[in-house]
Every structure is written in C-alpha cells, then in structure tokens.
Length: 565
Image (tube, rainbow, N blue to C red; front, top):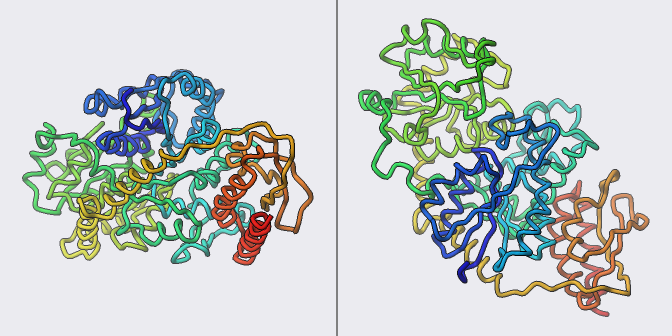
C-alpha cells in the first residue's frame, strides 16, 4: 500500500448500518486515506459500487462468517434473520478477533485506526490490543444513543415502571417500557451473547471518537448532551451521509416506471409508504392499511416487501384481493425494490408513511417530506418521539409491531396530513434546507468531518507506548458500582497494561478498588491517561449527580497526590 494513512473499516452486516458507513468510507477515500473494508463473502456484493469508484484506494479483507448455533448456516446478513437475530450476529462476529489480529500482524503496512459500527463494541478491546485507536460509528442518532446509555446504566431500576422517564436527557423524554430500544429491553442477564452486547454498548463511549450520521439542526441538544454531560470530547455529527455518498443515479432518475406516474401528479400530493427492508406486515395489518388508503382519497405509492412462499401462504405481505383495481389511477402497489431516495425527492411526494428507521428518517428530512410514523421495534419509537414531539415534522398513525390500525381513523389521519396547508409539511421543508446546508462546503457537518480527518491525521504523529514487563505492582483507584460484574467495562482500558485485574475491598458503597501492575516507564503516563478516560467513564456510569461529583473529586485528589510524589 502507499504512504497514505491506512484505516480498517468494519461495517455491521445490515443494510441500514452498512450503507451509511460506506458513504463515510467514500469521503475518507477522497481525503487521502487508504481503506481496507472487512467483509464476509455473502455481503461482498454490497461493496461493488464503492470498489468501482475507488479501485486503487479501497481494498477488502474477506473473512468467513463465524459459525453460531443460532445463526443458520449460509446466513450472513440480518435481513435474513430479522431484528431478533441481531444479538446472535453480534456475538458471532466477535469470533473474528483472532483472524483480524493475524491479518494485522502480517500486514506490511497495517491500519493506524479502526472505524467500526456501534454494534461491534468489542472492537474497542481489539483496537487496544493492536495499539491503534477505535472510532465508533453510529448509523443511528444521538438521541437514541443518549436514551440507550441511560437505560443500560440504570437497567435494574427501570424494570416494571410502566413508563420510564429519562431524567438526565434534555427535555426529560419518557417512554412506555415496551417502547424502549428493543436491544436493551430484550437483554437476558448472564446469557453469553447478551453480555457481549451489553459490554459493547457500554464501552462504545470510551472509544477515541464517536461519529454520528446526523446533523445539528435535527439533534443539536442531544449531541451537546453527549459532549458535555457524558464528557465525550470527540463527538462528530457528519450527516446526512446519504448526501455524501457517490451519486447512485448520475444520469438522472433510474428508468423506473413510477417516475412517469409521479410526473403526472400535483406537487406534494403523493404519500409514499414503505416499512424498510425487513418488515413484513401480517394479513390483518395489510387489510387495515389498504382500507385506510382506500378511505383517504389520497394518491399513494405502497412498496410491499415480498416474503417467502411460506410467509405468503400465511398471509404476510399479501395485498387484499381487488384493492389495486379499486384504487387504480390514484395508487400504485410495487412489490420488491424501488429507488426510495429518488422517489422521496420527487416534487409530487409530500408524505412518507414509515416505520421510523433512522435511515428512513434522514431520507425524509433530506427530501423535506413529513413523516406519518408507525414505529414497530428497535430504535423506532425513540426516533418517532424525536420527529413528533421535538421537531413537529411527523404524526403517529399507529404504534407496535403487532398493532392493527382502525381503517377509518387511519384514512382520516392520512387525508388530514396530506393537505397542502399542514404546518408539519412546512417544518419538514425547513428541515430539508437545514440538512442541505449542513453538508455544504461551509456547513457544520462538513466542518466536523474535516475536523475528524485532521484530528486523526495529527494523532498519527504520536507513537503509542509499548508495554514492558513490570516487577513492582502499583495501585490505582478505579470506581465501579456494578455489583454483579463490576470490572467488565474497564477491560478495554486496562488491557493496555496487559495485567490481570484484581478487586480490592470497597472504599464506599458505590465504589470498588482494583489494582494492576503497569510497566515502570508508564508510572505517570498511564495513570493520567486512565484519569482522562475515567472523567468520561464515571460520568457515564454514575447513578446520581452526588455520586458523580464525589468520584470526580476523589480521582482529582489522588491524581494531585501522585503528581506531587
């Protein structure tokens, strides 16, 4: 490889995660980085566009997908499992640690940093072992990250509440317990797969930096919360990344018949309906949605995911008999893939009935269309709350993966939402202007991307210290208030020292002590470094303002005492 800085990119194998990270990869390749993308064989076709765009600067590391008892052989992408399969895919991918280490150690010019998806939090430990920084890439929003972090650190007190109030987060948002992020809500204590997930989420915020596919006009208060309250000094909002990737249609709209139909519709009159690449509606839901569309007297495009033969037999994704004939002329039903971004960007489209997945949210904001939300699972309830209550660019039409809307009420909401004088439509158009401005040459997202690149390049001048054997153990105060497994979240930090972690007796009800033996040459550097990281760590994990302040004061006092010696 050439002398350009070399970065390893590790995407998570789900469409909503991979595509934004590939858009970021495209930008890094344009900014004089050499890239290696880690991929498994069946996900390789997803890379074809970016590999053809950057044939000399982007390379691949193709590793076999690790076996897992709950991931059927031959499946390498979450789209073939559904959201419930995430935990097992995340666990399976953690087995790639050793193959990555072997590749790294044998490479003539190994990476100087790793950028990995936030579902791959275990790569922080990997990066420390390799002696390179890890940057956590969030394909989701800052609001979701704030809510998820709040949930993980106060997990036990949340159970059985019914309604959870996130008191530390700006605006004090509240959620029904069943609407919390499902990857948190479904957590099973002591299950090995789930422990990998939990540890990954908690250690993500200890990464060198956190990069978000969002923009400040959409999530400014939550980005500042992460930066100020959680003490994350390197938070980069660089989205919407869909505006930064290679143009998928350089010759104009793709040759899809839907555009001829849209050209004949009035501006802002068409409702676009799609629930992502994974969700199949049940028979009752399909019938209710069809009934609502029929009653709404609104033009629409309904994209229906095609299920397996067995799913179709059971009624999943089946359009009711006679429906297409009854709405002929004002409605289109399309089965399979469509160019969603291009459709949303057509001037005739004025609304998007969506599950509120994050990529769909951003695509709606970029297009300037209001959202009619039907959140079902995962992060979707949190995203819907951001759009409806915070930004006023959306309305809820239904909630829940198994809920069946009332066709009459659904039709009424659709008809009212699609009127031209709807203020939510106007706010959505203003959000489009903000999104476009953010990625302009002088926009905030562009500046933060440049800042990420420049700060990373400056850091390359710093040579990491190598550990050496130590004979004299040194004690360091490290705090924890996890009673069951208090030290797992410190492993990424202390793995730098290559020493076992030994618990000592508690200093107070909320604190534990541990000691380790760093090499003598690190006696001050490591301690100060740990303190710097702990300034973020204790803020993340402290359960109250009082506890956090006490921990800060104690760490500061110990640091001053060590420096005085």
